[in-house]
Amino acid sequence: MIEVFAYDFFRNALAAGLLASVACGIIGTYVVVKRMVALAGGISHTAFGGIGLGYFLGIDPIIGATGFTVASALGMGELSFSRKHNLDTLIGAFWAAGMALGILFVFLTPGFAPDLFGYLFGNILLVPREAILSMAVLDLLIVGAVLLLYNEFFAVTFDEEYARVMNLPVRAITLALLVLVALTVVMLIQVVGIILVIALLTLPAAIAREFSRSLPRMMVFSVLLGAVFTTVGIVLSYLLDVPSGATVILISTAAYGAAMGLRGLASRG
Image (cartoon, rainbow, N blue to C red; front, side):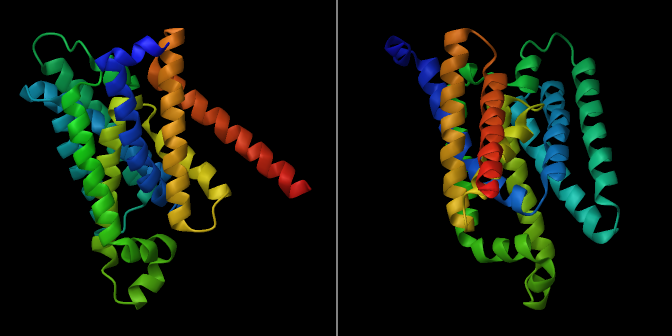
């Protein structure tokens, strides 16, 4: 087993998993506390439209997904605020339209999209070195934004009405938070894929919430859990020769089930 660490692809996979854990631990905490899981699910699936657009334009599909996903997140947030549309309906519309556009763009692109399956279900063992640098930059951006706007995000996450009373720009803060969710989703696509991204974004944070009494502790615990899940998942997927994204998610789900079981036993005692 030790010899596998000599391979660049395995070291890249571990680095990608750890970098993704930082983003999903911090942003996933806001998603879980603010109950934006469905919204994050909608954002993640609209990313497929950006993947398809990237293929169609002949650029890196992840770059296409980044622009498309951020624009979709802002569109959902803006329509929800300005038009007073039902958020569930908006999520469903963006979710379906994003997937449909992705399929259409891939269909219209000449040739064959060889790694499309990897974007849907992830393959962290194939993450290139250039992607590691991009993920590190996104982590710095997310951590910097959260440190700069921690109090504003805290107020909007727990009580929007209180934030308005305090004259905070709730609309702008919420849109900024949605942009960070979109960037995190794009990062996680390379780890577990579009279909499974919502699980890694929410399960570590959901477990951390059960055992943490403050938002910072919940973030730290969530980051650590994400690092454990991705590392164990990568090692197991390599040893068993099974898909890495699915392995990471099954480990996360098993841990969530065990945590809920322990929580239930503790409450009875």
